Picture 1 (cartoon, rainbow, N blue to C red):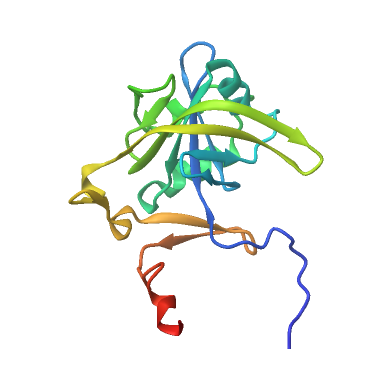
Picture 2 (cartoon, rainbow, N blue to C red):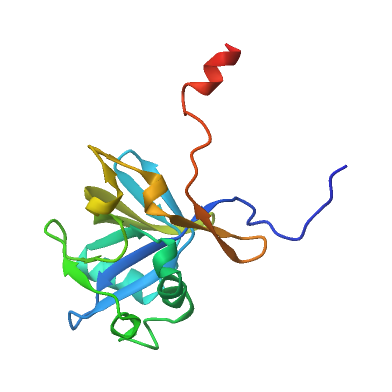
Length: 187
């Protein structure tokens, strides 16, 4: 038997993405965004409203980075979601994390997060069915600690996912199958 539940934002897992930009004065702004995904092989879409400081920065700088949050920095990742850059312009400095300027776009790469996509801003969509920042991924970097040969070893990333049912974070690490192969057993 099934039971009706109150939530409509019921997709799990939702990625915990750290979206980083530069403010007008060159300081770093980071926000926690769970509503984001790949739009195509080289494009990301982030469902963010224009009231976010980060969106204002993206439009001004025409660039941003998207990092995958991990368990080692869960407190900082959550902090970037509960504190607004509109009210706390130095929130990145208060986090204690460090960053370097991307070599590909006008945005910071947060050193502590193991995976980072460097993106050029394409456009902002605003309409009846949602809104969002669309960016083209021009480069992806991974910390050497999570790389095995030429590939990222997700079990080493220790990524976190957002649970919209209970507002929890979950660790995503264990491989349980092989995409595009396991289903062939039923063919």
